[in-house]
Length: 514
Image 1 (spheres, rainbow, N blue to C red):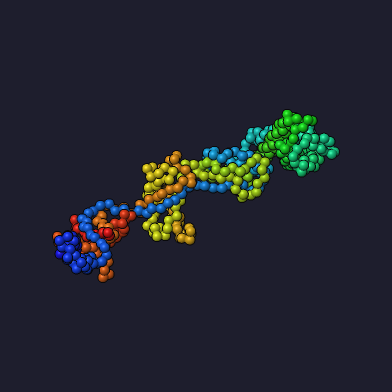
Image 2: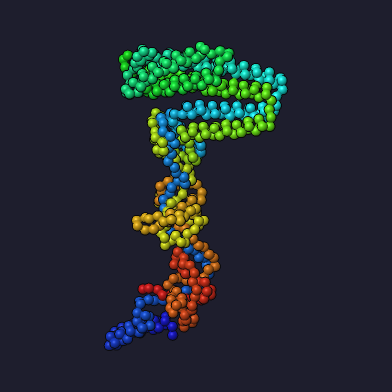
């Protein structure tokens, strides 16, 4: 007789004895029944049911929570300190990779880059000339190019002085009294230190203008324009810096009854125009100087002819010039903050006129439309996970009826301590972009770590252990027997995979707690 039949007979006897006409047997019989029940049922208060073993799908899943984060997020700062002269994006703007976001003063670096690029062009031109060879008519053409470039550079230096003189003595001196002797700014402003500095610089600029004028007056057909252009570029650089300081002070000007806001605005416009003219003159001198240098070297090479050694030597010069251009460009890029990837600007603390320090975060960005889930998995579950496992995700913002699909893309090899417990950071990527997903949302994640088909499985409670082996109780008619089994994984529903010992259709006894 099996366990179920014994249990049924005990219950039938108990109901019989509790009838009114059998009360005299109740006390002693009840004791017997309880003793028998405790004996046969192990005293555990456990009933049993049978389950027919069938093949089916077997899922092993891990449930975790997490937070939606942008796939890429970065804080950006300038590589070198300086005053910000341009801000080209605002919070919420979508920008492309490589787009400039802000920059600090870099006029001198731009000029240097132009000079290096011009020098590179010159070296390349010389190399090309050496490789091609020279004809008599080419020499005549080269001589004419030299003369033309010489005249252009000479005229450009003269024009640069005119632009500088006009900028300082006409535009700036409108609002500076006694500019050549004892300069005094004649408008009120909120920066007395900047005002004093500007007045002092005005005296120094007067000296530069006088020297610049003397340089221009001595220029002629036999002049060394290369040396003259370097001196002119130096004057223009200092004048440009002075105009920048003047422009900044004008932004802090206060209108009065003597000087209206309209007048101040006129000052600003005049200085801005002058700055543009001076900067253009500086770039033009650099360009014309490079052109003259190219044409002169070209003429020398055409007259001298070329050898294999000359060509090799010139090729080396080209490489050296390319390296200098790369270095100058790298220095310029340090003054510009560019988007490292396409995305959305989330913070913009950079303001025009603000003085910033190097490596101080001023701008933040996150990737646009690409979101991930950051989850910290307890160590008892991390062993089940692997990169590539799929998952179903629900977000608290939308509830369980709006599922999303995701995929594990990384699992940290080192632990992260959370509330004193070792966890491992896992990153899941949403399978498809969705405009409803936003950074910071709370995610509930069900990760499928194992999926099998046609698997025999039984509830965990059906598997017992004894004598060093695992077994289940099989029901066969009115009898039961212990059957040793080999088990595998445990599903998220509490089902145990049976690797051997059972066949489809077997009836297994499963204890059920009352």
